[in-house]
Image 1 (tube, rainbow, N blue to C red):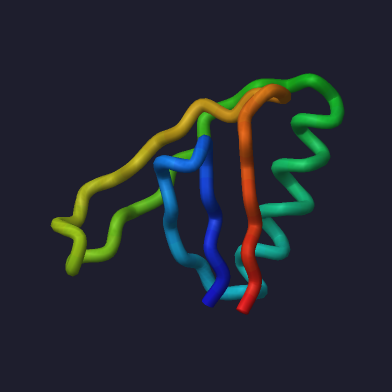
Image 2: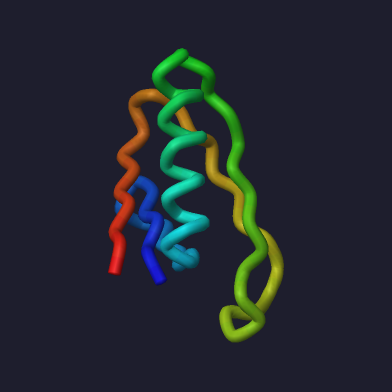
Length: 66
């Protein structure tokens, strides 16, 4: 499981293969200067629900693979 971190406050774990795909797609969109929202379902152990972040070229994003 890898970790996606956004602005140092939002951290969520994804399978490494999924995280690698997300990294490619997010990088391509941001390279073109296209801001967008990114939404995922939160794990039931975290109370369920969804989280959405606004991704833009100045956002601090970290991809950590295990």
